[in-house]
Image 1 (tube, rainbow, N blue to C red):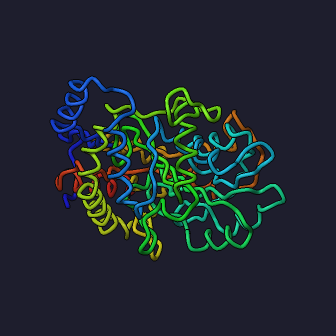
Image 2 (cartoon, rainbow, N blue to C red):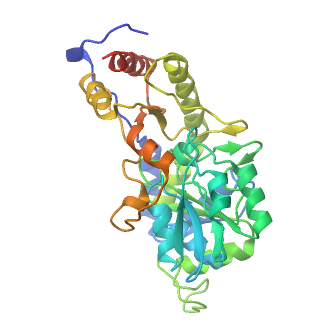
Length: 368
């Protein structure tokens, strides 16, 4: 690793790496040539191919990760009068999907090491109206699914996985997305793989999958045979065609993310004033983000930017403090994390030289 950086000579190292190439363009052109642009054979094929990565569970592709959460919740009967326990340290879509069903999100704290929902806090929050627990596999690190599944089973609660950031992550021998009644993945451009925009619901059984299919397509499986009131939340064949290409590349990209994370941890773990992310046993993260803790985050981020390293903060404001909710809750680990976390580049497009540049810049930034 280089011991210093000349600020004038360093090209910016991007925080995200959206990888789109000739195969994706060819896939889109194939769909355009077919004339079948809406939900069709590409979507069906994408669902089957994604299912192989989640224990062959039924999969239903939709137009966004938020739609995946919303339709998954509705499909298992979550609605007005229900409460769903969620972490406040996440993207707003986690809670928004609950609120859009008419249910109430109940915000609880995270555990401080892996930034995921604290099972002890979940247990303390269970009440008469609690219908489900929604763990978020934040930054691609699986939540404590052994403890959470036990809590859900003991209290007769549904388990809904927000796996928006956790493609190919695993807890023990099981991939994330295979623990709950439903799980939601996102394919937004900044995720570990993309369809351009889109999401997918993983379902525990075919009955739930059929309800999600009805909900995504105006309540019908057959044209003009509307069985329920539904949404237009379909994924197009254009998006699915991109997703099929990306899915084939995802295992190699995930392996690269894991190598990059191992390199950063090896280089940075002894630094004072910075805490590197830790991996729980038996978790296998997907490393959507490589998130460190720094007490003086703003100064740290400015220094890295001056050294040509882009960073991101996910998330500076807990959901319960956003104007949409504006709740006065005592969630100390959430509050602390929101003020200290910062994510370094870890994406698979990074070269060895760029990784070394990131590590060198972090060493310099911590020393200042």
